[in-house]
Image (cartoon, rainbow, N blue to C red; front, side, top):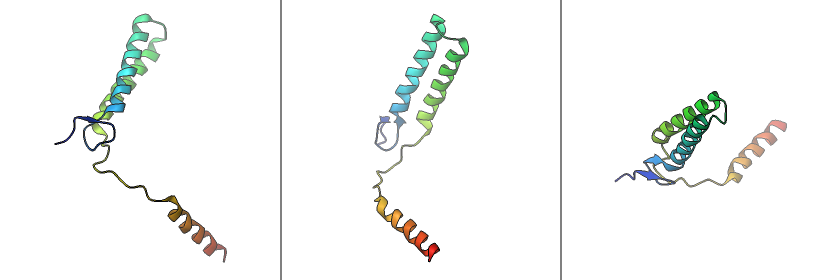
Length: 87
């Protein structure tokens, strides 16, 4: 069964993005109602919140936990490639 929301689990909604989008939406509406910022600032905050909310449902967090490979392997390849170019 796929979880409905998650922070680092597979599948479901990106809960962090969803929370941030709600914060942007609330801030945009508050600025719009109070008129404490220009109208275009409020509209941009609301649009960013809506886009981020949509992206929270579209973006996949990955279906499996990936092991990070050590970075020293890639640096060896680069160093070996540079020394081969010099010699």
